[in-house]
Length: 117
Image (cartoon, rainbow, N blue to C red; front, top):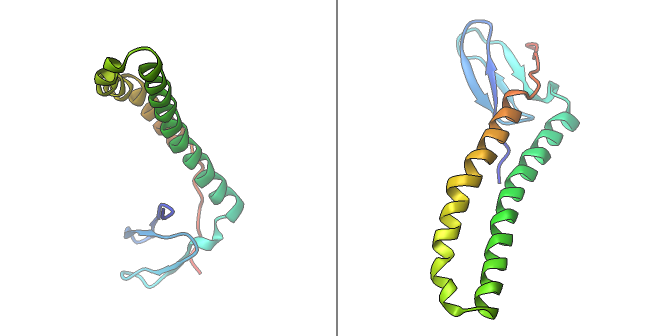
């Protein structure tokens, strides 16, 4: 999976999304912007944290599915018919809470002031 781009706003008002570690020459004023000015450990730490958020949602769904399937196998096979309803409930009730948590964290991420080269 690709890392998310970094949004650069030039002093002249131009905006561009640039991958981490790349340079962007502003077409309007000619200034060079380098995203490598962002500390690598901070940027990669944010990527790790966002990956953990995604894996927690996937892991929670897998745990629900495994427990439900195990219950269906050992209790009654007719419970398999309820699996879509259980996963729909997970999507309707758990995922909005998870999305709010991720958005709240994304809004609190640091911003960096890049300087043109």
